[in-house]
Image (cartoon, rainbow, N blue to C red; front, top):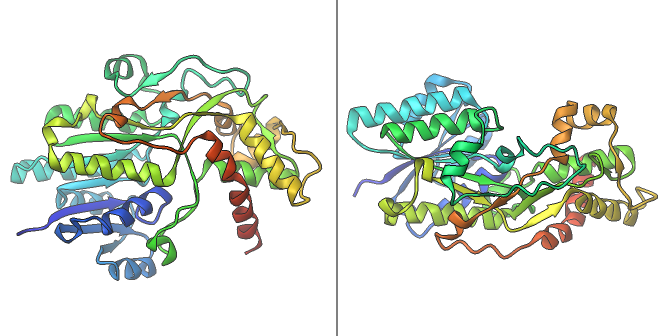
Length: 348
């Protein structure tokens, strides 16, 4: 029996590595032929020891991305939710596959609930009451503008599904938290750390006090790394078992969330961790000024992202049997370990 060709983008990343580790431990792993593209020859060699065909290269190499995608029946895109050039290349490769073989490849793409911040970027000064549901594709299609974050990639993917040369499934994680633990992390292949929380911690350590955008009065959803990874596999299994029963294209948005957290509360927990270690005199977060937003986040508008609202409910994801358990309080309880990890990294 021929094996199912699977291509993975983002294998050395936080989420991508976690998903790949699950695929390598999947009950049907022996029926998978997994290929990953990585920049490092050293990591490629390590991946091959896990049975992965590792290709040294970059998503910036459009010809390589197109060629590898043409050879894949299933593509996990987990590297960059805003890479238009790579998206154009892998869509071209998947279209070539369909044209030449008649196969309808499966694209599982990672976007994010940053998509929902376009009308709620209040700079930490107010909580939005606008909540988006992934089981309402009409609302998503009609009311989220093409200028929203990630939309420049998501829309061409949905259009490709409409044209019929692939089936697309777009997963939109919220703030993913938790330090990833799996064999790929242990082997030094994949990154174990998230982005949003460590960025706040780095800023707090640099300024000697936890910080917030505005008053920290805005809400985001959160999801634990293991539970978000659970969903990738639940979706993957559902597609393989009954592809006609799983929503795709415009009906294929899947939010990853299990409740909201307040930015102020998150920063307060960072403040507690700093005071505990004698690194700050106060647990109370203070407002980032413009210069700090530029210094710590690269640009003022980027920093304001940490004061935006993103309100999401994952009814569609849960309809597949996904049942996340860890809440915002569990997220807060994880902050101390994240602060310790960032401090350790700064010393290395």
